[in-house]
Amino acid sequence: MRTRPNQRRTTLKSRQKRRWAIYMVGGLLLLSYFTYEFFFDSMGYMKYLNMKRTQGQIAEEIKAIEEENARLRKNVEAVRHDPATLEGLARNRLGLVKEGETVFLIPPGAKQSPAPRPSGSPAERP
Image (cartoon, rainbow, N blue to C red; front, side):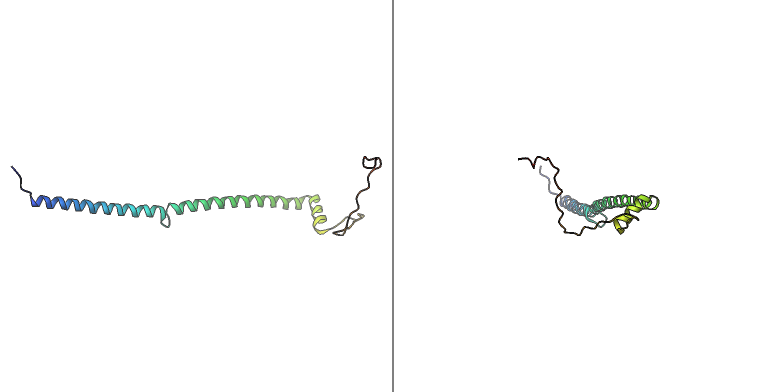
């Protein structure tokens, strides 16, 4: 015996299929939205990676500046407490000399004569 198709049952099944399709599309849209927000939002994962890279660069710069500051502090302490360092700076930067010292000034670009060879060197032998 053949059963008659129940119109109510077919209508319910088609409605269930439509609902299922709507739920799937809605779920995919939500999933897409959250994925986009996670990766590309103003505080997303890409922004996090960029901020992490920037933080590493700034940390390196801070370390270099701290090393430079330590070196400069050491130089300042040497100038304050070491008379030899102070004297060296005065001679090199200011051109100061002590009493009784003779200063020889050689003009820039002046040709220097070659040093004489000692006698008996191999170049003089025939």
